[in-house]
Image (cartoon, rainbow, N blue to C red):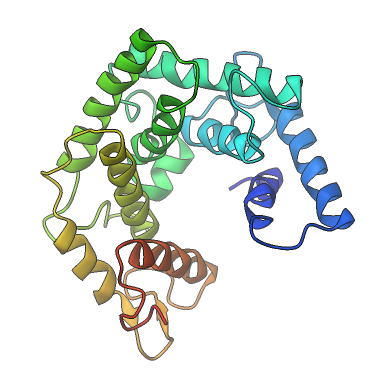
Length: 249
């Protein structure tokens, strides 16, 4: 996405693996880059101090929160403050757009993954904030209202075959992120019954190519995009209890 955003993965990659001095230095370097890249209004863009983007802001906040920090507390006050400002920016967008994070000017990420992609990432993010300790009832209720609107938009943007945004080269990644968004919304009590989960599962399975042993029938075809698409599909298939299906093993 952007050169520096590769650091966003570091805190997540360390989960369940051996933490070494070298890896700790890499994480610290990544955190510093993310903090420097934040805009004054609390958002993050495609690069340091560029126009705010919903998906980039969500990813930056989630990366900073990976060590247990929240918008209210954490070991590093600078990270807590950065996350709080990022949360306020995303929530502000949700308020102005009445939950429609896909609204406004179309960004590069939307061009790549589909118009509704901000709503996918925003839904996952707000469900994490929704459950934070210490958030008052009024704020929780507001988040719940935003999430209900966002989940409805995700459901309505689903294709008849269970996929999302087949007109983009990132349709498999978009489909997986949409499913994760709906799963996150359901976890906090949002009604997502209108989603065609069975169709989504069939669509993902249909994208497995036995020749390449990757999920690349729709996009990629051996390019670096195939790795991303395959990883996304595996994440969803295992979460759906389909880890033994063809292509997942």
